[in-house]
Length: 434
Image (cartoon, rainbow, N blue to C red; front, side, top):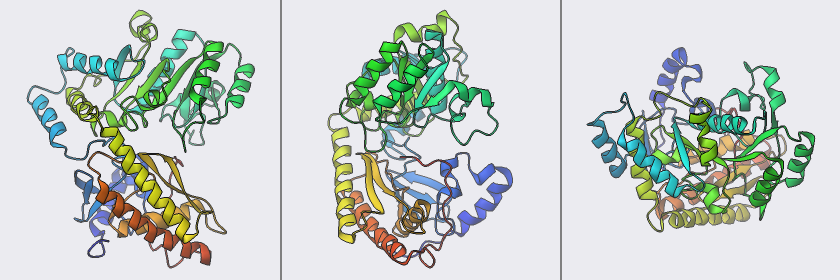
């Protein structure tokens, strides 16, 4: 519990300024005020250290969002910072490639399954789009089957409700399919026979895959001649260095990694089979960015991977996540709110989700949860991104705070209203993510 009630006057004032010059007052939808109970929440952060962040009002929070996943070894990690500072003294961007680019590329081919060659880009959308373009060039087909969230570019966003400004014709070439449903995928392949360039998916969604799901999915793709692409932007460097590919021992033709590979610095990568990746040179598949070789992020990635590949790191993260899930499940059972609140996800990227109850929708309940956790000095969406600076103490604190938040949710459900319970604004997210 925070020693005194937090005040957010500076955050509120800064939001007014930001809204005059920036849509939603933030560069990222999921970091904007719409994702937090405004009035009872920090809206602008000023600094971080380990697993803690400080907002512009000076309030300190234990952060379980970790910049939407990129912070894997903690804010202001001295080892990563030292590598960045050392490279900064040499330079940031150059007129030709640098040795550090080769060093990281070699490293990635050793630690990422199926990474025979790599191409650096800057964000997850760049990496998934590059993978899809390569698949289309390799197969000389156009249709893409997708499952999950794959970024902001037209080829994917055309398949969502957030498709304003995207030509309607593109939706004919992107087809969504449900997770963990091989029969549905097989049916789509029959419908689009010999037209499918690739299947791209987030390999870990919700509570994870059914036994053998990824292997069977790969077989279905191969039968049709389509490429399999894993979107490991979230799962890579989170569950294991090689993400789901490593965890479930299934090697895709191509994969996109990002977020956690550079501990918060902007870097992503598309990796895969040599014969496909070489199309960038041989067939001039255009995947090229001015800042792909930006050296500070590359230095950060090398330092981050060196930390993450030490023995026991991912076991510790999984154990902490499992402890959190067990504690949350016990609280849910104790309060008898299992019809409204449930644990979800695979450790260490897991947490709780909320379902509608009576006249309350999941946003009502999520808003109450976030507000009550913030009152206890915890920043969370409900799904956690643990980093290596979280420890047993932070997990115990999270579980204790969550039980208090669940009590507030139970009160709201029992009375069928959030009036008098939610005193901040109701959240309004763009996407509902696992």
